[in-house]
Image 1 (cartoon, one colour):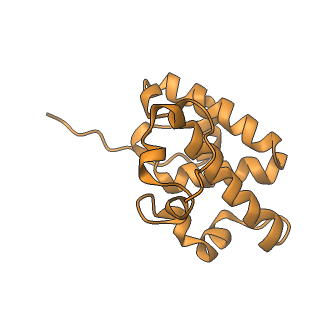
Image 2 (tube, helix red, strand yellow):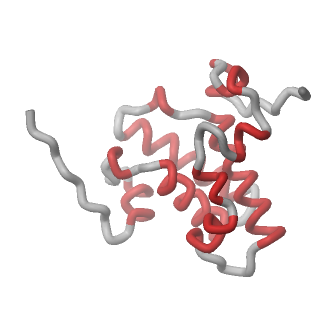
Image 3 (cartoon, one colour):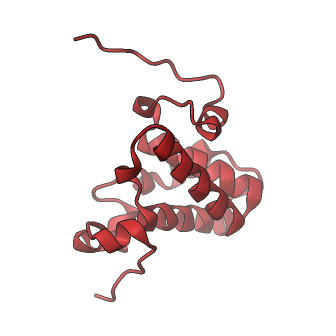
Length: 136
């Protein structure tokens, strides 16, 4: 069995947009960085809507539709937009923002888990539609 090593494209955002980014390279960090680029370029909510559309197209192109999660997509974009509007300088890089908010990189115990219970995120409903967190 051979393992194919993939090299990060020079422009991962363009590769994502074109649906040519190898799925093995589309880490959680890169996922957030691409979302940040959409927020920086288009603002909120247009950046989220455009990112969501491209993400849906990307997962379809790579045969990973089952991995798409509507609630997580919106929740991370909303949290990053708060950073962009409330704490960032105009044009701030993703790396600068994420250095301030490393909790966004922690999928299991980070920012999302302070808002959502695990059973909420694991539900089929949360995968299909933006579900607001229940009040604890």
